[in-house]
Length: 132
Image (tube, rainbow, N blue to C red; front, side):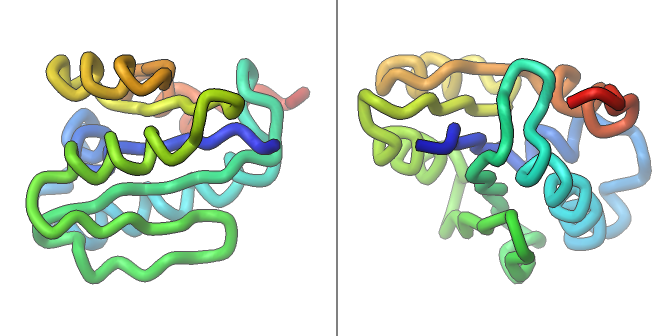
């Protein structure tokens, strides 16, 4: 069973000072596009392929999915949707949630998910390791 990687889109996008606040949809699309490669090859501590879900909210709600990256559209805050998706992973599946939101990390840990911070993911996206 493939590892489920859930990315808190607003949290990860907000951690990168690249002008995301001028166009939140475009920033979410850039992140989605970078995650496509991750879905196929995995990450150094997550063997690919992975099931990748990018959870978006607010101005990024209209973001379409792409090959390898499913979009979870939150009607309000993305936290509840992230917890719901993490819980669906079940006890026999590895679930990793990327967020820095402390309350969210507590909630997803309660359903058995592992947590990684946005910097962990961002480093993988900007400085990919060539042998994974």
